[in-house]
Structures are given as C-alpha cells and as structure tokens.
Image 1 (tube, helix red, strand yellow):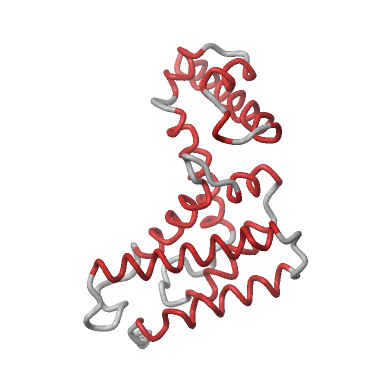
Image 2: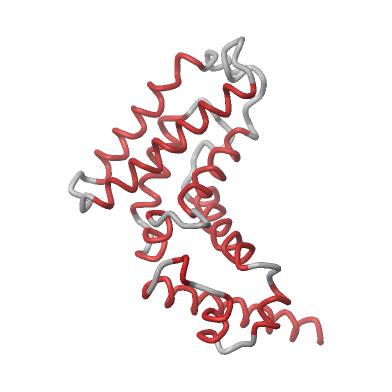
Length: 198
C-alpha cells in the first residue's frame, strides 16, 4: 500500500512539474526557467524537485525522451531500417509539425539545452543502433560518419526551424518531401546498397 501511495505521489509531483514547465515555456525562454521558478509554479519545494531529478537538465531529458518515445512508438514505421532516410526525415518532420506550440518553441529556440539538437541527435542515434558496419560504403571511417550524421541532423533541424520562422507557408507535406529528398540525396552516394531481403 505504501509503494502505491509513493508511486501516486511521484506521478502527481512529476505531473505538477510538467504542467508548470508548460506554463513557463509559454511565457519565457528556456534559459530563464530555473528550478526555483519551476517549483514555485508547481507548488512544491526545491528539495522535492531534487528527489526526482539530479538537475534541471535531467528534467529536460525526460521531456525530450518522452517526445522521442512517442514518435518511435506511434509514428515511425521503419525504425529498424537505416536505409529509409527519406522516410525517416519525412515522418519526423510531419510529427514535429503536428506538435503543440510548446514543443515547437522548444525545438526552435536554441539555448544552453538545445532541445532541437538533442531531439535530432536522439533520433539519429536510434536509427544508427540498427545500422551495422555494412551501412556505409567501404572506407567511411567513424569520424567521417560523425560528420555525415551532423550534416543530416543540422539540415533537418534548420529546415524545420526555417519552416516555422517563415510562417509555415510551405504546406507540411511539401516541406516534408523536400526535406526527405534533400536528406537522402545528400548522403546516398555514401551508403552501401540495401541488402537483399532473405
């Protein structure tokens, strides 16, 4: 019985912090959100915050991981196929385009904790976990792979940010297809051919 009550308190506290965060991010920038501001808004003390999270960055990590878990659980159709770069880029762009203003603001606002960069890095790392040494053409070193992945991440992130900055005048599907095409064609000459299905 005590564990259940403890679990309910944990859930209530984390929900209060998440609600406070959503209110604060609508009012200010991420750089101005402190543990004190969060806990004051949530109606809890700072000591309680630190029982749940070591740092404010750990709190942000939980939010970011929740976003990515939702994407991979409900939207990504080929998470284990690193060769589907065009599809990955299109689906993730459409997913971000459908998010509430809070997520858009987080992705589009670089700060000390760059949500956009971290989200795209997390996405890329999940795909890379399924790629093996046969994914890249012979001769691509791990350091070169890092450069290629940085190019893909930055291109996708800046494409989304510019789309938002420009007022979303390009239809979502057109922007997603453009990004998918740019992503695939910028690196496909570096990828090995897709293995034959057995």
